[in-house]
Length: 262
Image 1 (cartoon, rainbow, N blue to C red):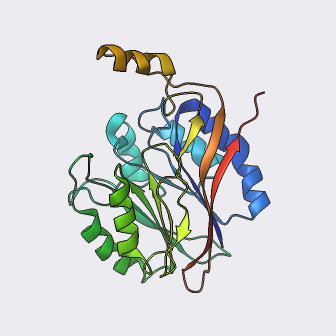
Image 2 (image 1 turned 135 degrees about the vertical axis):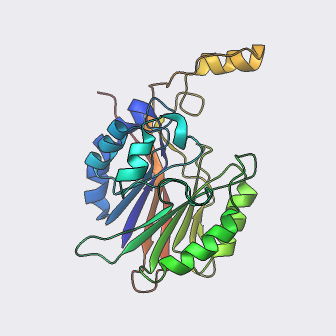
């Protein structure tokens, strides 16, 4: 079974890359399930019902998020009404929305997706390690294939969680830093890992934003408006192959596909 994970989709350029490139990638690699982190899809900050609809229409099956979840007030509508939309699992109990889901479609085995957020240099949510352990046990009753989006800042925290879950989930893919790492591997227990999937959007930028105002902020320490950039757009992420009978990863490779200028 092939699964494509798409790194943080940033603004209109990122959405355009998904809409343009995903259909070809899906056909070329015979991809069964597509997961995308969409927390920066609305103007580079947060997600709306409209930008989520664009990603779903382009062929994304499940949308995950992270620390920019609440940047757009209408996200509550997605959290309440959209079963394909996830927030980090480790929010306090009774927080609206869901932190995991089981994707079911005719012709392929069930695929579970879990969304977690780190705590190092991030908002202090519940402990993702304890939350993950309990949720994996529950999800394994419904699916052998389980993919985790761990939205975190610290590489050590990402690696530690993946090692902690090795053999219990199919893959742990890191998001948030927008810089694709070159450490893709499969751990001894059969869990695929990539510290950061990178981001889908304009790479002639500073993490998707226009360069000049960010440089000016560093030079002057004065507030600046960080607009989404627009040049050298890439779709980045990870392509996984998983054995559907065991849930163990067979392969993982980084994806970085340019969107040709029109």
